[in-house]
Image (cartoon, one colour):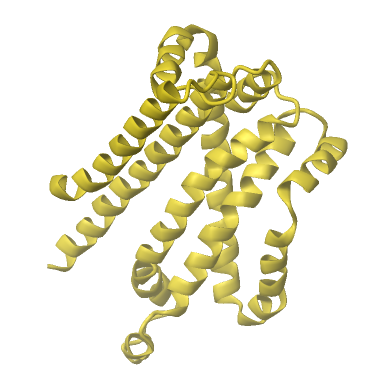
Length: 250
């Protein structure tokens, strides 16, 4: 595992070194493209100025992610258990992702105001689709022979779902969770552009309007860190649950 991580780390370090040397050699102004050392200096020096923005975005991301995942799972289970409903609503599920969030955001402000509701709706819209589709696919890929065997053994539909279909769909569910986890951070940042008082999106907007490009990159850096952190948490939960099931099955 450690050996495999050396390759991406080496590539990232190589890019940073080239970026730093290019900024110095070509004397690129900081307001156009600051050097990595300048970005890190601002990140350390300005921590007191933007830490509350980061914590606000984390809180909003967690709320939106949990709500989006819950809605996605409920939709997926309902569509799986009711095939006719799946035939009727699945195309609408696909169409919901064709609406640009940037276009929808102003309408949400008009309908729900500048409070928490429109922000959560945006995060839910970008989070629920990956988990819903992944769960539906995972449930549908259950081995039909095993389903037939359980029916022959007298298992009820509830037992088939909880004992066979849902456990079988866990890898697909976690695949959707990984995508939703990264989307949730971006959804939170986009929602903060609607007019929030704090958050990484607000910090980025203020930095951009004042031509503080270094602060814009600081915001981008922490967005990437949060995405990787949420992604790593999902991977850790996946390994824990899947390993637990393997140990249980012997």
